[in-house]
Image 1 (cartoon, one colour):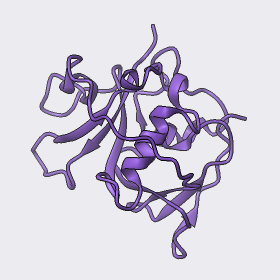
Image 2: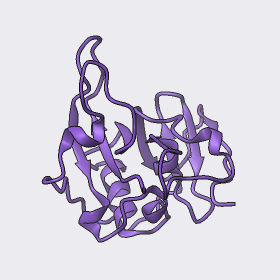
Image 3: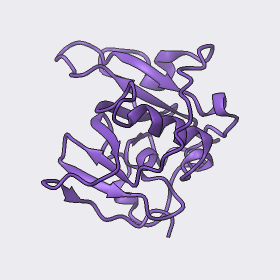
Image 4: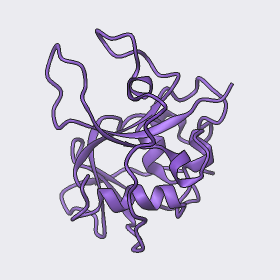
Length: 174
């Protein structure tokens, strides 16, 4: 079976012993795109442009904790649900406006790293995915070891790379 994903924004800082708090989420179905990771993890799709618009400077999610939560991901501690199922299916999520400007850099402020969008695959969903490898439509390919390494980190999209951050080189989609 295929695994479905939603882009989730978490509360600023997790509190030990308290479940993660989901602030907002975006469902790719709201943009008429498939919910499997590889169905919507492409540069310049309506869904990804909307997420970028929210993560840009001035966007409501700029420098927020991001996770691409899969419905096959692990259950949250002290819960019977994972992040994907904690939202429920009846809520389509936040409807962001598509961003017309191209933001070439995705910045991880937690790790002080950034990536460039270089290939057809958008690195953000791949780097922040939880549950990858457990269902059809998950990312399998070059640099698969990087999948999920940015999950739940503070992320933004930027026009320029931060001078004091390290570039993470990836070959997603090759």
